[in-house]
Length: 88
Image 1 (cartoon, rainbow, N blue to C red):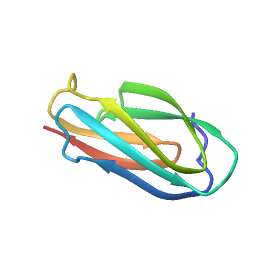
Image 2 (cartoon, one colour):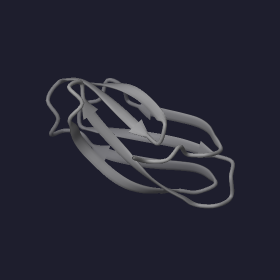
Image 3 (tube, one colour):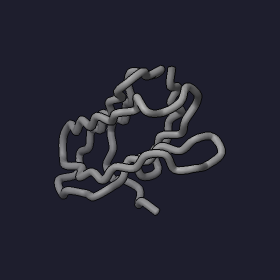
């Protein structure tokens, strides 16, 4: 289980719907670096992608290749932040 990411001011996932790549933008105000995971689950709860990340103070941008995913809805999680991702 990945801990909540403290000090998040903004959490944005784009484009949504996605085709081949998805970007995750996280803006954070706390100074210390925090280790976390980006996880993508299908709607049956199966983990289909996981990436370790380090989140620092300020703007953080991460990119994931989602081209291999079948079309459909997925749950993208970073710590306790969640968003439904539509894959075309």
